[in-house]
Length: 226
Ligand code: CA
Image: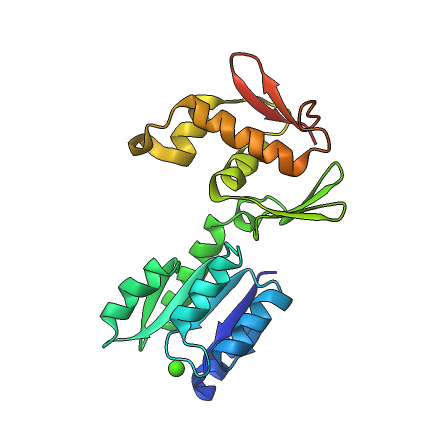
């Protein structure tokens, strides 16, 4: 069951959203101001945040920025009023994934939430937390804990890891990683993939020079061995 955090200070809107999302089978956490939203984002590990822009204490844009700065990659959908078009742009810049304008249709909102969740790791059938050898990896937060050390995975490291895990034991070609993750406009050298693999191994593997989980497949690419 997906857990969503609703950051909304208008009590009647928050209550209406809670009822509707709970009815649809979601687990709902409500935060009535920005500070409470930041605390809940850290403490309750929501799968998605529904974020009103005008919030007391810490406004929605700042909440969005801080959630991204803390390394959380969960989808953030902004709730905005019609007059806030400028803020929509700034919200997307601050790291929001999508927005919906008030007054909105609850059907449309639920559909957008489902679509956003489908695009994330949880929706792709990957489990959110993976054990890789001695490391515990949170694929949503991009966080690795190994022994007493904690690492944050960069965007590209995380995307590479997800692709390798999805086709576990089968090699993934360098060019496919480049196409899917960087896209055609990027034109990065295949060396770029190798550099990210080096960094990924340093975070995941106890002995990065002799990796046991992120394995080089000669002249092809890489494969993941659980
Ligand atoms: Ca508000």
